[in-house]
Image 1 (spheres, rainbow, N blue to C red):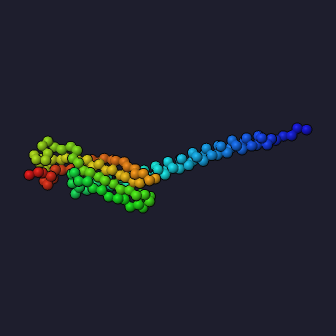
Image 2 (cartoon, rainbow, N blue to C red):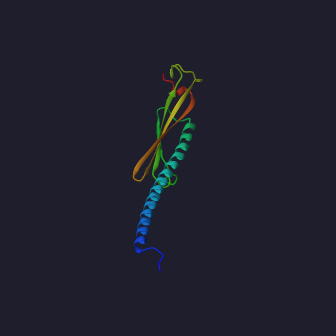
Image 3 (cartoon, rainbow, N blue to C red):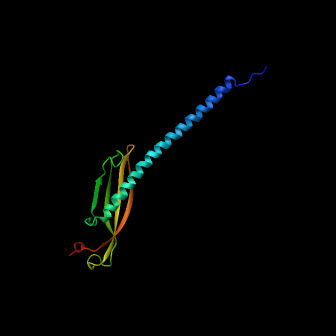
Length: 143
């Protein structure tokens, strides 16, 4: 009479193959989770950076050449330490600016915003630029 079934050797080989496959799947899952966490931090910083850039674009008291900076509340950064640094520079100006400019002339200002945060013991950064049209102000003129 023939017996049907698997031998002990076949069961051991199948178990070893399954063990190797499970370890590979768990390793890939772990790497995926780390990448997802890193992207979540980056997305959070991008959203806060866009919000801060919009705020700076509307700030009429921001002076050309001035560097402003600040920190974000760790609750907004998902528990991470983070902040920003911005600088306003004239990008495009009327001819003869500022000496022969009329108060009706307009300039194109560039705001460069650098966002930073600490993740995994490393400082991570990205930079965004924004532009705004501004009228030449009398206080901008040099005597």
